[in-house]
Image (tube, rainbow, N blue to C red; front, side, top):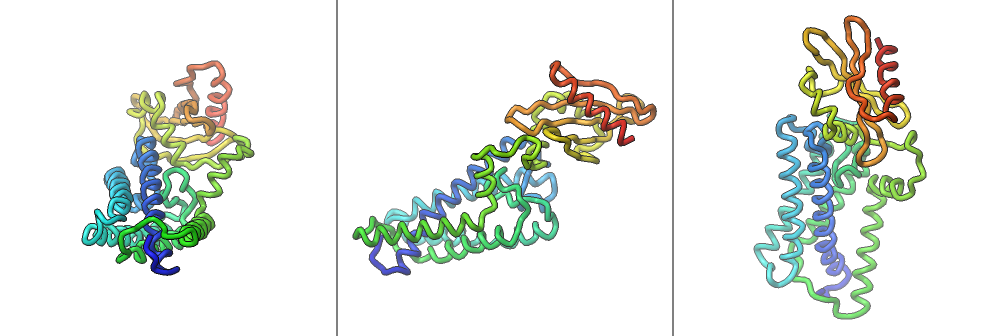
Length: 300
């Protein structure tokens, strides 16, 4: 690093910090987008776009963050100094400033939606904390413009100052990040399944990846559930459907624990009120299936 004083060191540390955050955020978004298997399960600012454009927008956002993150690293030294560094850092400022506006719009239009900043970890509704964090990153990117090529610290004192700035900024970002609480909750495993908060997007992703969904999707009238509720470790989703000439309600039950969570499905004939078993492949699913049909009959 250059010996340019406290302000210079503060500006220099923004480059590796922003690079790491951009790459990690892009990786988390990519994992969520790949695992979601559905445009319905997308989160974050992509939800303000039409449904047909959400997956494309999510992929484009991931690619942009990957390119800018690695670009920040590649242009940090003398090799990428000058115009390349200016372009990458200016594009990063544009990305974060656009994100601030998009999060404002998302908070107004879809107040229940998460920011999607770090994939499925970011399912908490967008708050002023989330917007403030993005604004801080925008200022950090702006301060990196014009920073000379980075070098190794010239002294132990300068290295210690850089580490102190990094630690302080990371601490501030953690305070502004709702994802920190989600990570601690997952690490502690203190909440039983019945009390664990599970985002609807994750349940829908599990549903669309399941064999019952692929088998009975053609009977559904809409791709969105008309009703959703939760009982203990199960989330129930009701879809209107047509089977032959009969109008039916198809009730899917998604278990809320485990990566390969089981999915059960039942049908309620709207004309007769009779519930039928469609898919109960394992003996231990019979009780769960029974609860689906009892709930459906109660609702009718």
